[in-house]
Image (cartoon, rainbow, N blue to C red; front, side, top):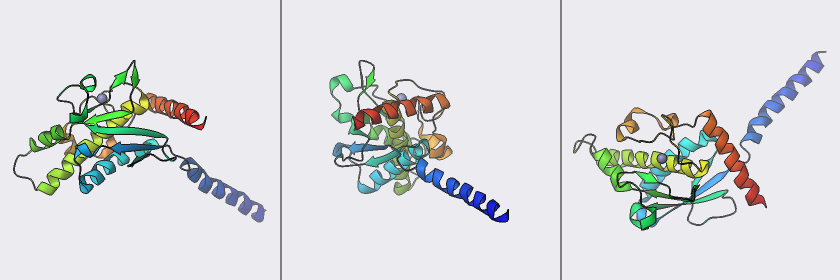
Length: 206
Ligand SMILES: [Zn+2]
């Protein structure tokens, strides 16, 4: 009897250990090709990507910066500076970032306006902050904006929510107030994300 109990307990343990590894075995990898025109140095790129990755990891999506796409990429999204936008791609000049839509579908393309992020952070406490900290706050604001725009692409939706990752407005002060982990998706957005990613993975497998 004792032996049987031990065996049953072991089986549960094995299953419990196996389940998480199965769950994280194949998270979709979304590859971001960052334009050199964004003028990020290595440190900025690292901080921007860290913020974006931190937001998307709990949502089951791996975000990776790549120079060239490879077979591991489930999606490739090009990230460009606002100065590279063609006339038809230009959005609100005050926007920190945006995604062009064509015929109701998101292009796999994000535009960022790093100078706008810099001016918003500079407006918090001008001339009193260490340059390194200012750069970090700017990178975090850009990283959150990038995570939001990736949300528009992956959800294939122009919609905004009152809170979370898909809220319409990202403020510099929130970088100091809220951790990246507070930028989540609600249940209907998560359901839409799973559907959209499974559709694209089926297409990729064909
Ligand atoms: Zn938006």
